[in-house]
Length: 269
Image (tube, rainbow, N blue to C red; front, side, top):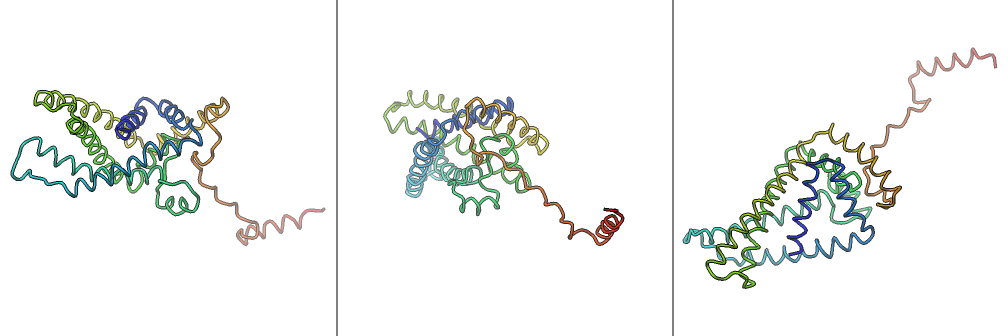
């Protein structure tokens, strides 16, 4: 349940980028206003439940007895697809967190993974770094990966709610299960629209839009920092590439050095 709730909030937050980078950045600021308590929230409410659900899910999938080859009923196929999408979703979520969050935030570890273009998301430059991360590796690897992974997560959650209701005894009669199926389908359809909106908002813009987003984010950062909405945490901001060092005089061309020497000689002082 905490994972499902977080997934709905997370996809809705990312879909807000369809409106504007300002809307998305405000939503991210609200999340990160927890400050130093945020890692506790992330691990207590997201990562540990995810690891528990993933380990338990792998055990269930490993011991599942699929019978779709003998019984081609819709419920049997849904049972099988629940296991398939669960495995895909687990792999997807592991790399999704590694790609944008990095899993852990300490120096030596980040120095290893960031050259590999992981831990790419910067909360205080949310839209621009999200768009840039989607354009890595040729601009098509991550969008395809995210599209498949998100849709598997949507199916796994929507169908999982239906099966959970049976396990909890909420709908056990055929009529109740039929009504629950309709609710699950509607929920899955709505969440699919939200997920596809979030995906498109991240993959559609290019480098020019990302640069425009960054200018907006930097202005918002100054205003929100001054008003006390956020704390000054440089590690959450995008770091501009270091400018090339200026050429030292003795590293200039011989012709330039000669001209400089002539100029010095002609100086009466």
